[in-house]
Length: 81
Image 1 (cartoon, helix red, strand yellow):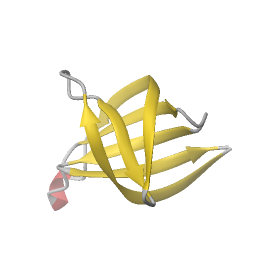
Image 2 (cartoon, one colour; image 1 turned 30 degrees about the vertical axis):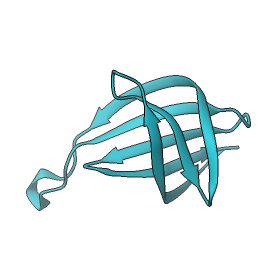
Image 3 (cartoon, rainbow, N blue to C red; image 1 turned 90 degrees about the horizontal axis):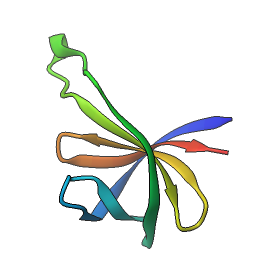
């Protein structure tokens, strides 16, 4: 089961390829231990929405999440239960 939360986060580190390595959510820093998958989705171009880059990740607390990068804004898009 999944939940869409779309909560803003701050990515605190990324690797040379630009993939996130750690992020801060609710004043807690989380390390990404595995990027399971990543893909791009085009936005609604008629309304000027940018392409978004999504990452399915596993964190050091065993959470499975989807992070979303849209422009320069990062968020936790989806949480897997």
